[in-house]
Amino acid sequence: MGVADLADYPWDAVAPYAQRARAHPDGIVDLSIGSPVDATPDVVRAALTAATDAHAYPQTVGTAALRDTIAAWYARRRGVPGLTPAEVLPTVGSKELVALLPLLLGAGPGDVVVHPRAAYPTYEIGARLVGATPVAADDPADWPERTRLVWLNSPGNPDGRVRDIGSLQAAVARARELGAVIAGDECYAELGWDAPWDTTPIPSILDPRVAGAERTGVLSVYSLSKQSNLAGYRAAFLAGDAALVARLLTARKHLGLMVPAPVQAAMAAALRDDAHVAVQKERYRRRRDILLPAVRAAGFRIDGSEAGLYVWATEGRDAWESVDRLADLGILVGPGHFYGPDNAQHIRLSLTAADERIAAAAARLHS
Image (cartoon, rainbow, N blue to C red; front, side, top):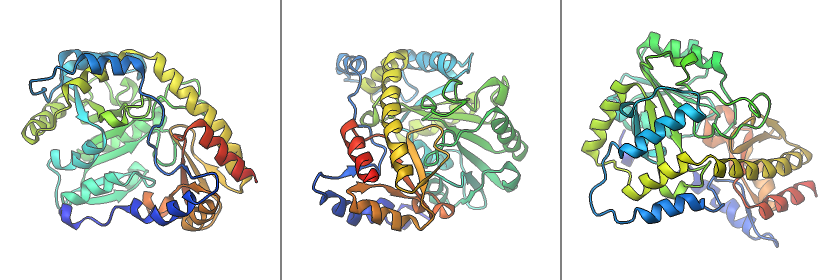
């Protein structure tokens, strides 16, 4: 399979519902895509501005300042001490890495790429691009012998579920038994809502209690799009097994996958400043506290959603029927069909709409 063989982009199927939602007298409330609407923090914008004299090619490996800052951030915020600059690497957002990782690791026909049963579709796309077989399986006991790469996503998109230390330990142990690389997509880890994640940090796959001291075969992937409103910057990074990082670095040099120098400066500024992350989290908390009761009042059951940027809900019927019903209220949501065949009765609602739009959605759902 090649790029030309990919199916139509799934979100194109939502367009008719978006058109109907826009016809609402008070306008559309778009909860379908998790694209930040809040301002990029001043500390980040100032760093970007100061770094605009970027006449030379940036280094694929990243500046020393950025790599040191990433390592320090993992120690401070993710409970992962002792990372060295050789164990971290900036990426051009996280989606390109998710799509390209099977290719960069040399996976191909005959190999299996495992991903969650409720999953962001790019995990499957990355496997299919190289001719590998995608397998949706959450239980490590179900991972096939031919597994080359395992994707975990905690907190999950779309379902907001969190893997605890024991669950992560079992996953890493099984991946090592199979000789597979295991990658944790952790970009919502600062957004814990329900106990125990409202007070306990969501664990990283690189936590020493999970990966051990050597981090062999283990990668963590992180994005600043959500916690720092940097989706437009394409600012992300990975960390973990130094040998894997070196291998990925070499491949990325050949492909020209370089984070622009001003963006690298902005990333370092964002990672050094925890205050703006706390402010943004509180914004999402307020929106969630308004939206969840309204979704329940409209007849939906909320599943998972203990962390992350989304509400994962069902009213016990096909998701397209729910999408249709909500479009009549001027509310656009994502159908669970996009996240795997096991999710055909769920919808995903994003917390990234502005406060006024979240309030409008709640009012319509209560009516």
